Image 1 (cartoon, rainbow, N blue to C red):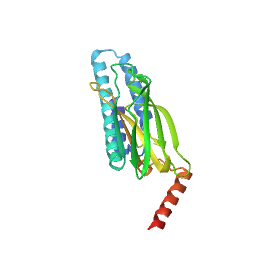
Image 2: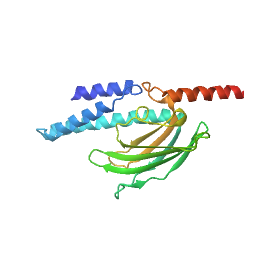
Image 3: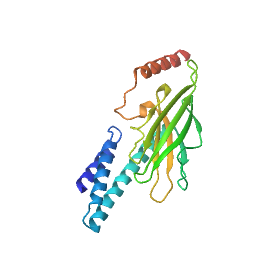
Image 4: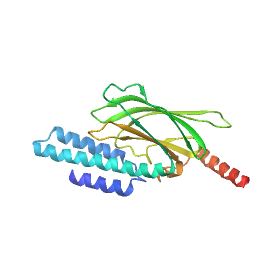
Length: 212
């Protein structure tokens, strides 16, 4: 188990911008949980607990590093989720961000909270005005955990932009959802633009050249 954790740490720190490591994190987390449930001694359970802490620590660090990059070129929104009551069905305070002249209204609904797995189900609604097609609305529902990394796990928007939601919290602090809208070129290296995004980018560049 120690070698598996170390190998995942090496992968995460060196290739987190190009590889989707979430399945590896989840698989190792489940194996640690299974080993803890059948551990023959308190010492073994403590050792596995340390592995779990390392797993979550490296995941939070990778998400933090990626968000620093994306916040430098995009717009971020922080919201705190109140777990003192049942937050299911709660709509967090909406916000509007403007990036590269494109205005996006963002709203997050808390759909579910899994305290055991430390995940939060969210519903994301994004509205972007379009001068030709009118107001464009996009919705998405997904679970957010420590193991979601914004450069990999994000939602495509109009005009080649992306929106990512990550979960920031520790065992002693309340969960905070951090959302960031950012240019699509800062998504992971494995991401490829859709055909219509390529056309939009070419037309936009041509229009800017014509205005000069």
